[in-house]
Each structure stands twice: as C-alpha cells, then as structure tokens.
Image (cartoon, rainbow, N blue to C red; front, side, top):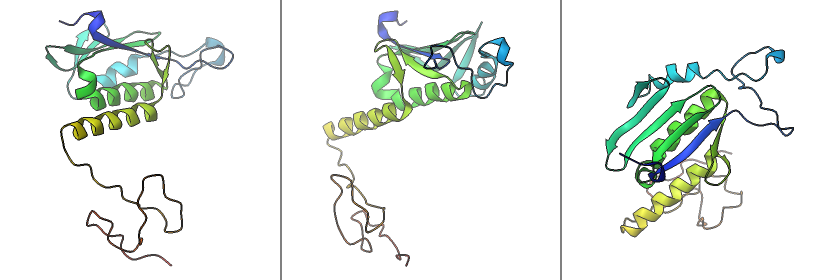
Length: 182
C-alpha cells in the first residue's frame, strides 16, 4: 500500500481567470448568474468506459494494476479532481498516466495543477519531458536512437541538429521523400 509520501499528487481544477474568478468549463452550458459550472458527473461516466479504470464507489477510481508501488487513485469531487500517482510509476508508466490525467482535464475543460511546484502543468511540456526521459533511458541502455528526419520544405530552415541533405534523396532511414511537388 502506498503512502502519501510515495505518491505524486495532481489536482484538476477549473481554470482561474486573470481577475481571480473561476472560469466555467467550456463544454458545460450554464446560466451566467449561477456562478461557475463544476459538474464532474460526466467525468465519472467517461472514466467507467476507460480500460483498466475500476470504480471503487463514492467518486473514487483506480487505474492500472496494483504493484509494489501502489496503484493510481482518482478522487472526483465537485470542486476538483485529485489524482495520486505512485512515484515509481512516473518513469515507467508516465505516458499512460499523464495521458489519462490530461484527457480528464480536457473532458472537464479544467487545468492540471501540480501542488509540488505550485503551478499549472501544460500538456505539451509534460509530453516533451516524457519523451526526453524515455530517450535518456534508451540511450543509457545502449539502444541506438533513430537519426532525425527532415520532412519540411526543401527551402525552409532546419531545426538545430537536423542534418542537411538533398530533400529528394533517401533520408537515412530508408523511406525517401518521394516526388517533389512543383
């Protein structure tokens, strides 16, 4: 059984506007006088359809298979959704875990807040970090990394580290670019 110290805590919350007022989820039509919409009931319905998510009752769900590190826990409440991820899962199961977390946030049109850093997580930044972490793991294991491939226009500037070459020639991974459009 995991303990709170062994878990990485994330919270899904309605976004906060510049004025400090909570903005409503975009997907939920509401009466402007009624205050921010915070209906999390549709989240429970969607979670029940996600493979390997098990409903535990009273807004509690578990994701994945329990192991020595524990199991991912999801607590759905009206004001927020709390996600507890076993820290040992982040390196090994990070892409699956964060995909589910960001999918839930998108369903609610909410943000993913990380209390450890006191800020909002951005999906693209987290995914880039997961890719970099996986590449480092593969490199440490001696797995050769594929060479970068340029698929952009021949006259466009290449990103740093992208090899130059004839855009009509084979691109070092055997695929070739095919005919060039005029």
